[in-house]
Every structure is written in structure tokens, then in C-alpha cells.
Image (tube, rainbow, N blue to C red; front, side):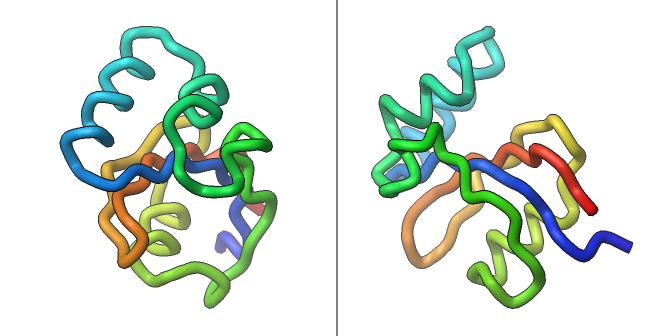
Length: 93
């Protein structure tokens, strides 16, 4: 059972922008570059990297997506109170 997830994310204001950024990633753009360019979260400075987190450390919608997501895949858009996230699961343990 997964106890912790290492994830990165891109946070944007609306679903339209999230889908636009996701399309660019799916077309070969680097997730890290897109995070630096488009994310409105302070984590954009570290390419969207949130480090390791366990259950109860993130808002429920984000946590559920990250824990259920497949390693190496980009999930989203995921709507939370902060906006729309694209989440990349880096690793699980």
C-alpha cells in the first residue's frame, strides 16, 4: 500500500488553461518547463516539485488523484479550492 507520494504539479486558474498546458505536455513539452512558465504556485520555482507527502497533507481532491495516479503519468485537470492542477506522480513508497 502506498504510504507516500512524490509529486510535482502545475496550478492554473481555470480548466481551459489547464487543458491547454496538458496538451502542450502531451505534445512533448517538458513538465518542468511548463511548471516554471505557467504555474501560479510558489512551487513553480522548483519545477512544480512538491516533494514527498503522506495522507492528510494535501487537500482531498489533490491527494486522491496523486495517490491513485500512475507513476510517471500526468493527471488532471484536478479541481481544488486553489484552482486546477496537473499532477505528475514522480514516485511512490
